[in-house]
Length: 432
Ligand code: DOR
Ligand code: ZN
Image 1 (cartoon, protein in one colour):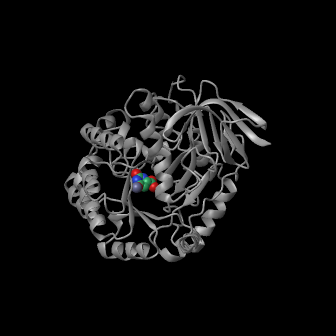
Image 2 (cartoon, helix red, strand yellow):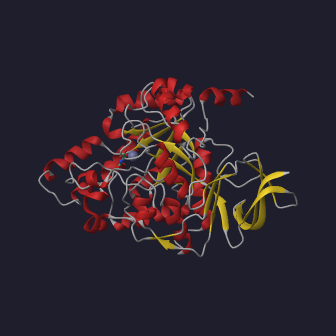
Image 3 (tube, rainbow, N blue to C red):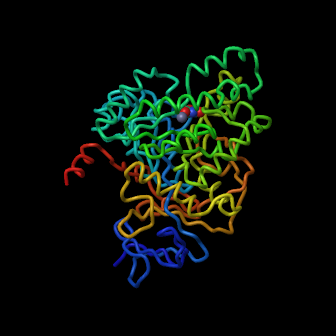
């Protein structure tokens, strides 16, 4: 007897759409097709079923900044947007820099998250963080760090066989470009103060210093991408954020300081190059860099407003609409949203609809496009840079075989689990 049957959907599995049933038992996919009995069923006729998205870059703000977001609001926002696993970044307060601060955040997330999660550790006590279970070290803000310190950290990450993720912007370049612009108040000055060369220079340094597995966060320039592409044989991957695909410097005109984000928005030609890179697969992953701040904070002048835009709930819906409008294939979109992040993070039971994997599913109606409306989003940020843009939202999101979202949230806070990638475990697997 199975627990659940997802019946008559078109199911994305093995890189194609199949008309098949999904049988679920104990949170896992037990069979695709065939005959059986199940306690419950979901009618997915007319729907497409894809694996839940794995968002490897969110800032859920708890502990420390829960007026902007917390584990409950952030994870509900994720579930409503088809994200079934998130990787939280360590720049909370206190920052996650050692095993104690890691365990404190782990307890908060376990108590409140409705989706599965991993926690990254910051560039602190690398070994204790990885032994405690941190999924990676990062995002490392390169503009806050000397090359010597970066080298020491990446060395340690390499020694322990782990992954480092870097926010590649060069602090020296930013200081040099910012200085003469200080009197300017036009929001576009933020992009001028952090030009493409700041990213290119930092990526170049990270690639030459690193001997560990390296992941470049939110790549935003054609030249930066070209550097990564040329080093493909090295163990490097990269991600793009939705705001660098769907928004450009032109949008400051309507949204002003709200669009302050790091790295900044670029010229439309850069967006085109990022779309090309994503289609080709040179950009591995789409990750939201969900960085919520309140409207009253974002309304400050451009030099003082906090950087970052929310995006965990709109990422997959925007991408599904991009598929519908032939900007990208469904195959590449699902790969970038689910399969590649799972493989980079080493999440063995996630990222694909396959027998034995966790039943993390997004069910959507390809005909039901709508316009993004902040009133219907769940982040505490309470604003979106994508208001009015077309999107295809999930009808239903399942995490480990349970419906988490179907218009309402159907599980209690704390349903989400920590997906461990701890190094002690990796060592055991290597010695098998
Ligand atoms: O714009 C940004 N905001 N970029 C980052 O890298 C961090 C983030 C935040 O935490 O607000
Ligand atoms: Zn970043």
